[in-house]
Image (cartoon, rainbow, N blue to C red; front, side, top):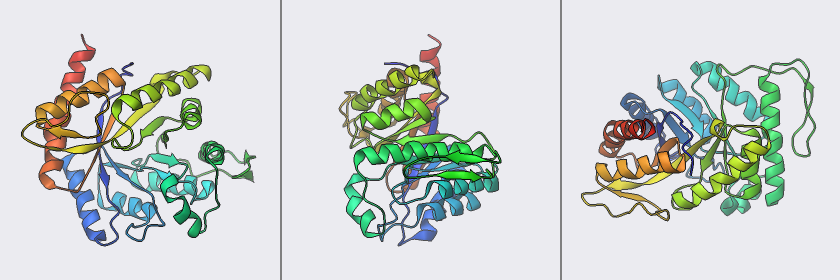
Length: 306
């Protein structure tokens, strides 16, 4: 399996808790102060327990200073592509370049709830086609060209003035598991947001990553231009309870064990970003970013230098 040589990044998966909105913002501030690279927020607007992801993303940017944020990932079954592009560019401008765009076709487990809230029913094939159009709409509007056009089945631009441009060269990261969507990532996206570790163990993700590589090469792209972001689950315990096997669904063990596992996933599987999932336990958040992250960076650098 390849190592794509990406600079490692470490993030936190912030719960959009509608029962404790101030707590979510407090956690975002804390994560920012600790020095995390990213905050990801899931997008399930049909769940009464969740705040709207885009509203929370904007608020997180407003109360933090350094950390970058992204939807992990935008549910495009529920959102209009041009408005997503506009919101993403706007938040990037307002934050000085701290927004990245995560996109997804919608969660199959919640398809009925999405339709109940007004979304149009979509087949798996439709979600891929619609997401391909969404990427095209974003690129067209962000170009700032005076006659932006996209002719699609689900999303269209018919000659609108593009803009605003993002404040930086914003990435588009796509959450996916099926082969058609993975090929789309290789064709048109900047990164793959890998499903939660419990749904896609690292060995499985590494195998599916090769589909992206094949598609990238077929489209004249370097696979190393596509970042792999892994949503990690686990906890810190005195003794290791999960091994190095490719079928692990969580990481449980002391700091040394976490360092071994993430170094393995970075160098042997090519994962470049690790997003920690779990309740906002202060000690766990501190341990991950202050003890695990620097040691993984050091170990990976040593492995890469031979």
